[in-house]
Image (cartoon, rainbow, N blue to C red):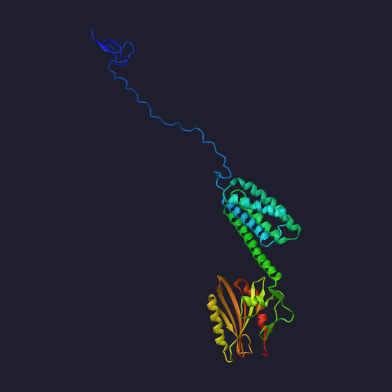
Length: 364
């Protein structure tokens, strides 16, 4: 009798005709079962997304703030700075505490928008709506329709930039409206600064009112009419301090326009006005840069020794337009020099011409 061992359960038994184990019934000829290797470790996958944390004012929201909101923030900051400049520099009242508080709020909210704080957008929309209702109504009630139009432009552009996520068309239109408001505000600030400077100049003793007799030479014999009451003559003390060779110096403060009279003696007659013109322009080229002669001609049609010159030059980075009236009379040379910024010159050109047209030198 043959004895065999079951390779599956290890039982030793007599070999049976079916060659199966009497205990586990496994075939004696079957290979033993291989031990399975343990499965490699895999970290469990998360079944839920991590909870969203709420950001503080020092952290940006996960959602990106729109470009329109950031542009609105810049506009709010500029609007606040405009109000502060009006109050502290131009010394124009902000019409009570409401305007001042509004400027402070604009500065804070605008800064938060620029920094990307999306959560302040609803507050900004509320501020724009309340400001539109209050200040627009106040401007209309007082009859200040220019301020009402500017307030409407400001409020409309801000709402267009802040509401939702503006598309390209709304973003472009609202930005253009905001730019128009900022440029208009800048223009009025520029004009206000000039008026304030003129008022400060008028309140000082630096300039004097021109009388009905017009302008007359101090050390030399000439006279002409002032074109309007907006022109003043600087005191002799200020004139000699600023330009020792000037006999008179007229100024229109609101346009920053000037008219200076310089008379010099040649020592003997016979100087040609063409040579005098060249010497005057050479002096200009020494004092300024990018000198350009725009036009030349006679100052007086009935007097050969007179010249009229239009020129443009850069002085301290500013473009200045000049109009010269040059006259050689006997042994004296007369320079009547009108000048203003290039942007303002055309608005006072007719007034310079009036002074030339009414000019009388000696007994000429």
